[in-house]
Image 1 (cartoon, helix red, strand yellow):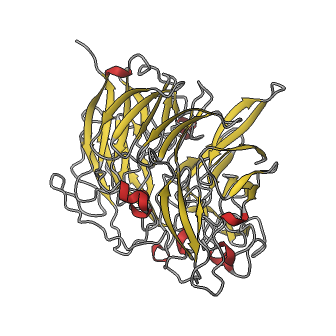
Image 2: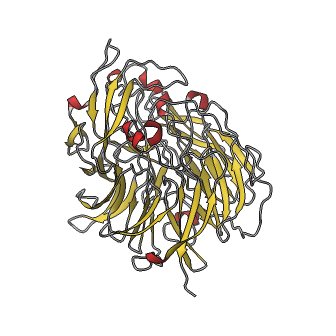
Image 3: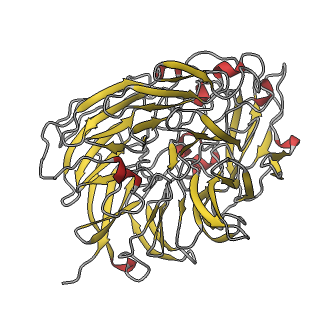
Length: 591
């Protein structure tokens, strides 16, 4: 994905006097704030009065036990208020809100944070990061959310900084540079709070960066440990070298290619208290041209299980060894339990990979359990072996350019944007199904010679995305995890690029680029509710209760990677409206 230089938009707002890089000083103080404890964060998936984690629980299941809005009452869902992010910064809005003490904390494009009073929909404060002109984000100027702990909210910026803001005022408590943006680093994922540490990754794999996962003190920003995600690079614990990241330099990489190996953990993490492990995925190896780097190229396109106390990699599972299609392994690994044939509880985890296969792993040790395709016409592999390794179709790999200017082009399915990209799926404890936003598309891809240059795109490949079917690209699927059986499917004309929420009320919520906010019957896939929000949805819905009422919220604003890199697909969606709005709903009360 070749990067274009993105200039920061003007920061003038008609209704809010905001200085770039500072919080609005006209702060309302009606909200009653209480410090967020780690005990509250641990119990986030069970409590309903707030949302304290990205994923609505550290396991990332995005399941709510609330039932007030259900299959019978959903017809009475109505808008409560809308909140506009305003200004000229109407780009992709991929945020998931956090809610505490009647206040919503939500990020917006160009590294902005807003605090909104839920009762009134009024702004309490906003913070604009002062971004340099030369930022190098891969896939739009998005941000996916904040972490919350004690009296601060913490988020990452497009120039690779981590910023902690006072919850009440929006003023900066601390700010740390995580990496050099001029080398291609950025941060777009929501941080995660684990055992009193704030956990972050980095983005920038297309620039030949070296991926890393880090833990910091949320009170000060001080680094506790740093774990590189390319073998051979040094990790640190409490300021001291802590051994290499699980392998010798160059062991699964030729020559010095490991020095700029990519494998950026750009999507963030989940955490399972039962195993005391952070689960985080890594991106593509650099460069895309796989003929330049024979070998498995650890730890690219993998899921990693990391000890939160030391940063040690406990186990890894590589879904696409020697990746040649940009099939990042970053997609969320969601913990769930099931009973085996002997009635024993298996601590499992599932992930829907960009490569088109839905995997179930043992989350205690990373052992492979099963994998099944969840999109059609996969061309790069004919299946997965008993150890979880793909059975490659050699003619499905783009050709070696060698001394030529261009290698043999192939049509590969799925496209590099993935059978499922960043958009988070949901797991229902009620139906035991996963609800997966996916896309049915392929790409013409070819390799080219390339050499590394700091701060420049490091691909060695060209591509054009094409739809597979005439009537749809997007597909929301209800998947039985162990069999891979698709229980139902909703087909959407445009690609799906937003997250999913499911509830004990028997509902599945999702949005579309066409601006439709939809609620489905979790057992049949029947659409029970639809509302046109006025701009494309690429955010993740959430739900909570306040004063005895269940609220549901979604952020809208079309953007992300699809309109930038979608090829023929991008042409089909060129008329979809951009925006930047928070929408909040609850049930209508009859008098």
